[in-house]
Image (cartoon, rainbow, N blue to C red; front, top):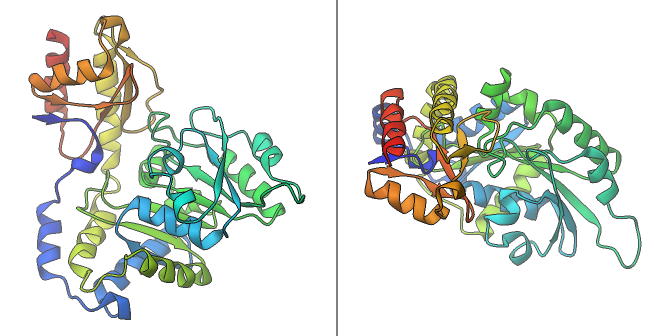
Amino acid sequence: MIDLRSDTVTKPTAEMRKAAYEAEVGDDVYQEDPTVKELEQTAAEMLGKDAAMFVTSGTQGNQIAVLTHTRRGNEIIVEQDSHILNYEGAAISAFAGVQPRAIKGKRGAMDPAEVEAAIQEEDVHNPETGLICIENTHNRAGGAVIPLENMKAIYEIASANQIPVHLDGARLFNAAVALGCPVKDIAQYTDSVQFCLSKGLGAPVGSIIAGSGDFINQARKWRKRLGGGLRQVGIIAAPGLVALRTMVDRLAVDHENATFLAQGLGNISGLNVVNQVDTNIILVEVSERGLTSSQFAALLKEHGVLVSTFGPKLVRFTTHYDVDRETIEKAIQIVGKL
C-alpha cells in the first residue's frame, strides 16, 4: 500500500529506534529526564527562544499556548482555515474559554491590515483581543509557506498593541527548508511557537513548544493540568533528538517529490492540482471525473494508494520520508490507469 495520506504515517528510522532503546531517562515531572532536557535545550536554541517544553502532540502544544497567553472571555485572531480553528475539536473554547475571530487569508496568509482592523477596541461590549495565531506552513492552503515579511508585519502590529503572537508551526521545518533559512528566522516574529517532531521529521510521537522562560514556566502548569506530565519520557524524546539532527535537510527531497507528483497528477485528464506546491502537500480537485473525493479515495484504496479527503471535491496527497521517487512514479501510474 502506497500511503500518501499524511506525513504523520512515517515510521521511526533504525537510528530513532536505537536511540529510544538506549535513552537515559528520569522522571520528567521532576524535570530529571536528561534526554528530554537535551531535546528541549536543542529545540530552544534552534528556534532562538529562551526555553522549550516537550508535549505529546501539536494540538496539545497549541492549546497550552492559548491557555498560557489568554484568559477566559478573550478573543483570538486566527486564519479561517487554520488547524487551531478547524481540527482541534473547538478546544480553544472548551478549555481556554476564548472565542475565535476568523480572517480569510490568501494562501493561508492573513492581510496585516485586516488583522489590525480585527483587534478589538476597549468597550464594555467587546472581548479583549488576547492572541494572534499564525500557521506556517498552512495545511489547508496546501502546505503553503507564509512569507517572512507577512509574519513580520503582523508581529509588529501585535507588539504595538501588546498582543502576543503564537505560531502553529506543525510543519515549521518544511517552511524553513522551502525558504532556505534557519527556523529561528521564522520564529523571531512570534512570542511562542509549536512544531511537530512526528510529521515530516519522522519521529514517532511528540511536539515542542517554545518561548520565553516565564512563558514555559506557566506552560508547564497547563501541561500538567491537561494530563501531559510524563515520567521516563526520554524514551520518546530520544527519537525527537535524532529527528532534529538528521531529518531536517532531507525535507527538500519531500518537496522535490511533491513537485514531481503534482506534475504527474496534473497531466491526468480530469484531475486539477489547485494549489501552488511550496512544500510536501498537493491538493487535487476530482469533480471533473464525476466522483466525490470520498469515492475517488475509495477507488484509489482498492488499487493500493491511500489519500486524504479534503472536502467534497478535493483530495490531499502528502509526500514524506517513507515514499521515494520510484514509489511516487508507481502511484502516478496507478492513478493514470484508473
